[in-house]
Length: 495
Image 1 (cartoon, helix red, strand yellow):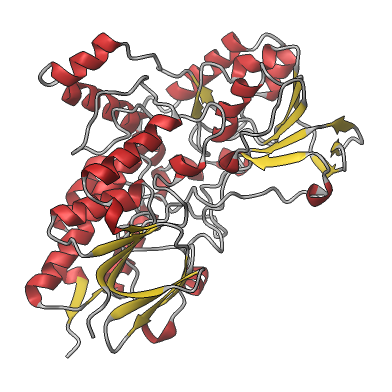
Image 2 (image 1 turned 135 degrees about the vertical axis):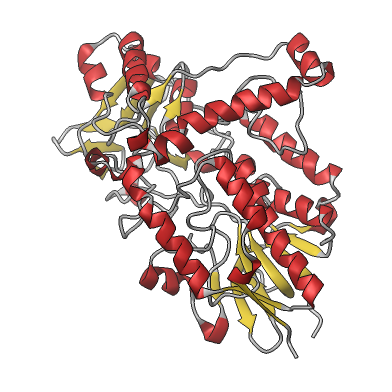
């Protein structure tokens, strides 16, 4: 049976866009991108809250094969990332091979015909020989589990679904959460709100942000000066590598492991005037246990007279406010949920029902065997299925590096399948087990397993206490994705 398309790419964010472009470049142009939303860009299509911006330098947060010089800042605002997504889709002719408004709800593998059958929420279906899962992890907003939320009579919105029709001017606004989104939105809305109350469960490590506007002469230099883009990208990549992949995965081996914490604490001392507030904002866990943030405005916001930091736990949401565990009710007109996303949770890993060989359920497989995937790409028992953001695939560098690395792995598999006439590609259990053990063996050096991380309330940890990051420097991920042993896969045809 000939499938409708050779490849189905699920997700129209940068993971799906990058996979589509690189597959096309490699000669695999018969694909269809399925995207739930009404536009491409993924997180940068959905997240439009005030202050939204990339949290690593823009020179790294772009495809290596499509580096642009038009960023307005070192850390580009969200609207520019959305524009970059549309630019890439149009330049590389991906839009005509994209189906918007298509939320995939199930994928079922046909063992006999070696193809996948996909169903969408609106009842549409298709078949594909191969499936590339590119749904990302920071896509499904996670509301807080707080009593009374549904009974609140004011306005409620999650940062990931911002309602720009809501006027915050003079309103009593409450923000629940102090994660990466909150760090950006809080200083952006504080000047507008009548009063802003920030409900903090766990303080976040906040480091100074090496951000600056890129004036026209700088952009011209990037565009015209030979080697300027390369130098800026290398410098940016080095900064990113030092601040997460190396610092997180080789924490015990680095003599400068505490340098980041010293910088963060000094930044806090300079930024916050009130000693009591400063104490509340001081993390009690090691830098890296949870996602840190970079901002030159967040901490300073707590010096404002119209901003209150509340660290007493929330007891319930009332009809007109937030009641904390000490019995105090804080009147609220607008409630902003900066509570992040479902990550390593049911309903997101995977984001839809996946049934492989003999009807095996991927969610159940991970539930029973812990999250695992060979180089973050393939899982035994689920042939012809590849993921961009699978367990133990992402090492904490730029997502764009991940996209290119994982797609190189996928392309290598597909090329060998085409060369050998194979219609079924499946990673072996032996290869998967070997890789999983190698990741677990490296845990002893990672920052995540320091004692203080138990205080971090970090989404990095799954229900098993694992942190399914790839414990590798970026260069290693780039090399192994292109030179892994093809015998780690079984290739077969349908005859």
